[in-house]
Amino acid sequence: MNFQVTTLKILVSYPDGFAVMDDIKRDMAILATSGRDWADRTKRLAARVPDLDIFSQRLVDRESGGWKITDKGRAVLELMEARTGLDQPVEASAERGDTPVPPLPPLVERAKRRRERRERRREGRERARVTAS
Image 1 (cartoon, rainbow, N blue to C red):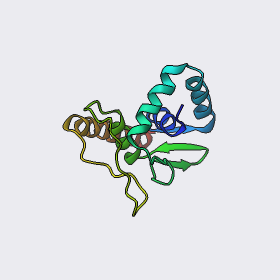
Image 2 (cartoon, one colour):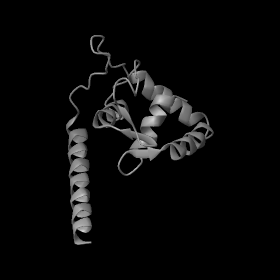
Image 3 (cartoon, helix red, strand yellow):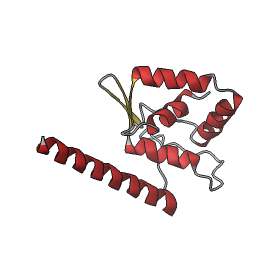
Image 4 (cartoon, rainbow, N blue to C red):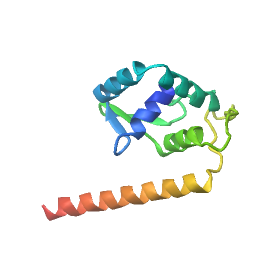
């Protein structure tokens, strides 16, 4: 099982991409014991970005009591999961030490925009609810 990929997959499954350490550990334990399929899948995904380092590349931020996936982390995960025949590794930039994010396919880009709109709407509803109280 690849820790880096598993961490990205766990964080992206939470509503705001943030999970406290207890939740991350629990989910990690479940996936680690789920069998060979998960380990094989994470190895395949990790092979697409061989120099993956979720913290130094700022794909995941450490926040109070937990971790949060960044927009760049979401984009890299979407790139790894894209089924467009991208089984070859994505070259990492040696100068900056981070993984370049190539242009996303149109469907992935639309999904990203939809997710961002949903987040903005949710934040607006939350602000309205707080001001109404």
